[in-house]
Image (cartoon, rainbow, N blue to C red; front, side, top):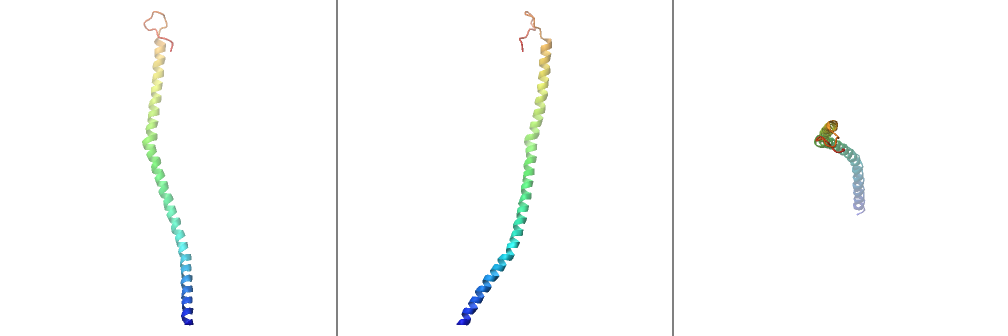
Length: 102
């Protein structure tokens, strides 16, 4: 009976020690796997961010740049036309080309 109890205790200890050793060794492996997954996730995040930037440039920033250039050109044309109108205007009281003060 004592040998059965001793055998059970030894088996229990062996099971506990082997479980602890397995956990310890797997912990290192698990940490390395986690680091690898984190690096992969960072790369995916960077690629996704780059994709968002490219789409922003293509769909928003570039059309806005074109619109700004067009609007600036239009403002310059309007300034020129206004200047021409002021040059050709007559300020005499009865003149048909008379304009009011702009």
